[in-house]
Length: 407
Image 1: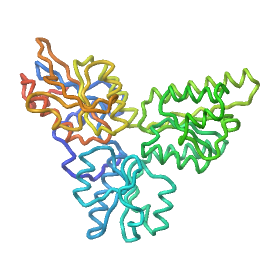
Image 2: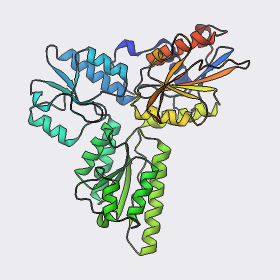
Image 3: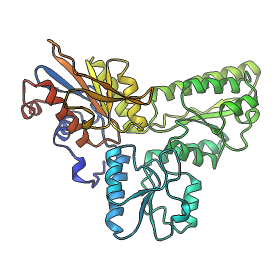
C-alpha cells in the first residue's frame, strides 16, 4: 500500500511498534485478536486495526501539500477535513478556513470565494451542486480534491445500478457530509431515499408494500428522497448502498430485510419486483476496525476506551459495539482524563459529556483495558491516552520492557 507523507507529529513511538509487530506476524490481516501489552497488574488490549486509514492519510497529505504550495494565498476547506478535532485545529492553525460546518451550514458566504482562492475538497467528497458552483467561480476543484477512493467507489456503484433502473436506498446519516455527497451523485442518475437505521428501513418497507400511503412516505422521509420520487413507480427495483462508515452488520441487516420483503411482496401480488444483490460498500478500514473491535469484545475487557472525534461516525459505531460488553469511555484525547483519575466521556446516546470518577476500578485481579480509535484519529493521540492511563494504574512493568515482549 502507498506510503503517505504526513507530519511527523501524527506518528507515535508506542503504537508504531505495536502495529509493526502485528504486520510482521499477520501480513494478510487475517487475525483480528487484540495485541496484549502485559504490565502485570493490568493488561492493555490494543485493537488489531485502528487509526488513520488510506483515505485519511491521503487527505492529510494533500492538505499539507496545498499549504506548502500556496504561500500567500487564501486556502479554504469545504468543511472539516476529517472528523477529528486535533487534525482540524492544526489545519486552521496553518491558516486554512472552513467554508461550511459539518451539517452544511455556511460559515463563509460563497460570494467571498474567488478564482484566486484554493479550495480543498475533504475526504467525504462533496455534492455535484457545490462542485458546479466552484467551477463557475473558476476554482480548480481537482487540484486538491481529497475525496476518499472508497467513497468514489460507492458513487460508481450507484451509477452502475442506475443503468438498470434501480432505485437506491442509502444507509447513512442524512446530515453527514458523505451521505449528502452520495445522495447528490446518486440523484444525478436515479431515484434515491436515505434511511439511517433498520427502524427507518422498516418504515420504508411499509411504504413499499402499500401499508402506508404515498403521502405518508413523503412525510416520513421528508428531505430524504430525490425530486420526482413516486412510490408507485420507484420501488419496483431496489438496491442498497451506504455511507462507508456505517455499522456493517446493520447495513447487511437492512439489505437482507428489504430483499426478503420485496421478494415476498412481489410473489404475493404477482409483481415484478427486483432487488440488486449489491456487495457491501463499506470501506476496508471500517470493516477491519469493526472486526477488530469484535475481537476486543471477545477478550472480555473490564473497561474500554475509544479515542476519536465525537462527530466521527465510524468511531461512534466502535463505541456502540464495545458498550455491549463493558463500561466504555469515548474521549477525544488524553486531556479528558483528569489529574484526579476522573474521565470525561462523550455519551453517544444523549450527546452529552459525562464525568466518571475513578473510572479505573481497584481490583485484586488483573484488569484488562481495551483501547481502540476511529479511522480519523492519529496514533500519536492514542499514545498519549496510553501514557495517561499508565499514570493511574501504577504498572508493575515499565513500558519499554512490555513493548519488547508484545503478545
